[in-house]
Amino acid sequence: MLKVVILAAGQGKRMRSDLPKVLHPIAGRPMLTHVIDTARQLGAARICVVYGHGGEQVRETLKALDAPDLAWARQEPQLGTGHAVLQALPALADPAVATVPATAVPLPPTFSTLVLYGDVPLIRAATLRRLIAAAGDTRLALLTAHLDNPHGYGRVIREGNANEGKVLRIVEEKDATAAERAIREINTGILVAPAAALERWLPQLGNRNAQGEYYLTDIVALAVAEGMEIVTTQPESAWESDGINSKAQLAALERIHQRNLAEALMEQGVTLADPARIDVRGVLTCERDVFIDVGCVFEGSVKVGAGATVSAHCVLKDCTIEAGARIQPFCHIDGATVGAQSIVGPYARLRPGAQLAEDVHIGNFVEVKNSTIAAHSKANHLAYIGDATVGSRVNVGAGTITCNYDGANKYRTVIEDDVFIGSDTQLVAPVTVGRGATLGAGTTLTRDAPPEQLTVSRAKQVSIPGWTRPVKQKKV
Ligand code: UD1
Ligand code: MG
Image 1 (cartoon, rainbow, N blue to C red):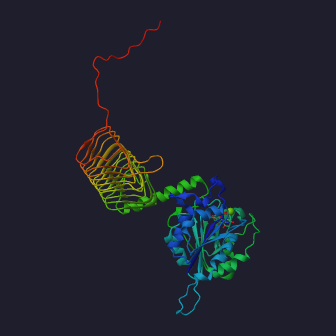
Image 2: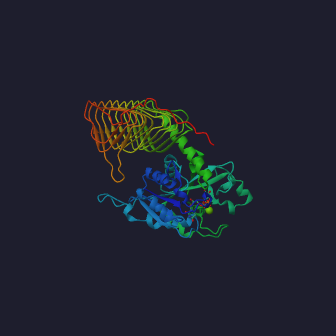
Image 3: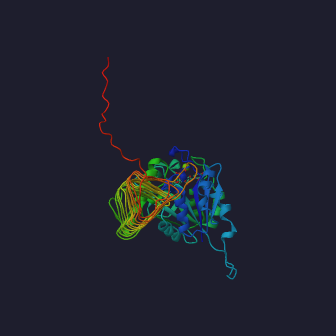
C-alpha cells in the first residue's frame, strides 16, 4: 500500500508573487492540485501535503479536494527536505489507513512512501508506477535523470564512478567536490522507500552541511549503511521531473502540458489547426471529426459534438456544442448549450443559461443570457436576449433588446413560435409576443402583442412640405 508525501513548504521567492508558489496555475488549476491528482491516480491510501509559506491560503484554495485520504502537515520553520518529510510522519501514521477487513488474517499491510513535490507538477503516474514497482517492499528507489547541465542538482554518487555501479549516496551541489560536480546523473528528488525504513532514517538526519539543512537525500547513505538495495529509474520524458521556480519555468511547463493535451486530442481524432495554439484549462471532450482553429481557450468542462467546428479565437467555458454546430471566430460562450447544426458568431456572446436548440443562428454582437431559443430561430445582428423564452422559427431583427431589468428585478420575455420582430425593437418585460405576431421596426412593446397581428408603436411619420433647412447667419 502506498502513502504519499508532497513537499510544498518552500516560498518560491523567484516567482516574485504574493501568491504561494504551489498555487500558481498550470492549465488553470493550482500546480499542487495536479500533483495531488497524480497521487490519487496511484491509489494512495493517504496523501500528506507539507505546507508552510502562505499555508492557510494553500489549504483554503484547495478545500474542494478535501477528503479523508488527504492530510496536511505544517512545516515551520523550513529546515530542509528531510525535516519536511519528517513533519508528515504523524499524519501518515494514522491507523485509519490500514483498513484490514475483519475476516482477513490480521497481517499488517506493508507500506511504501512516495515523496513528490508541489512544484513538480507534470510527473506522470506511469513513471511513478515504474518507480514504485522498482522499489517493491524492500528497496529504496530513486528517480534520477542524466542532464547535460546538472548544475544546482544533487548528484548521484555510484561505486566505481560507473553508471551501473551501486548507488552510494547523493551529494548536493553546494557540498560537492569538483569531481562530483562533473557527474551528470542527478537526483530529481522523487523517491520511494519502505515506510518503516523512512520512519527509522528521518530522525537520524543531521544538518552539518553547506546549507545547514536536514537533507532528505542523506537517507541514501543510511540505506546503504543498512545494506538496503538502491535502485534507480528515469522518467520517460525529461520535463516530467522539471520543477518550477520562476515565471519563465511556469510558462515553459504550461506549454509542455498544453502540447500533451493537444496530442491526446489529436489521438482521439480531433483536428487542430495548430497544436501549439490551443489552451485547455479543464476537460475538453470531443466526438468525431471536430475541427478547432487557432487561438481557442477551453475552460471548465466543454463538450463538442461530432463534426462541430470551433473557429479562431473563441473562449468556451462549461458549455456543450452539439453535433455539426459552427462556432465562428471571436465568440465567448459560458455556461451555454449550442444545439446541433446551429451557427454562432462571429463575435457572439452566450452567457450562462443560454440554451439554443438545433439550427439556431446567433450572429455578430448578439448577447444571449438565461434564455431558451427553440429550433430554426435567428438573431443575426446586434441584439440582447436576456431572460427570454423564444419559440421556433422566430426572426429577431437587428438591434432588438429585451428590457429584462427595471433596476431592481428581472422579468421574462416570451416570444412564441413564428414571430417576426422588426429591427430596433424593445420588449419591456414581463411581456409576451403571441404566436405568428409581427412587431414593426422601432416598436417599444410594453403590453402583450396578440398572435398573428402586426403590432407597432411608433410616432406617425410626417413630411412637411415647404420646410427649408436653416442657413448660417452672416456675422456683422
Ligand atoms: C533538492 C534535492 C536535490 C535535488 C533537487 C531537485 C535535497 C537536500 N536536495 O534540492 O538533491 O537535485 O531537489 O530539484 O533534498 N521544501 C520544503 N521544506 C523545506 C525545504 C524544501 O517543503 O524545508 C520543498 C520545496 O518547497 C521544494 C522541494 O522541497 O518543493 C525541494 O526544495 P529545494 O530547496 O528546491 O531543493 P533543492 O535544494 O533544490
Ligand atoms: Mg534548497
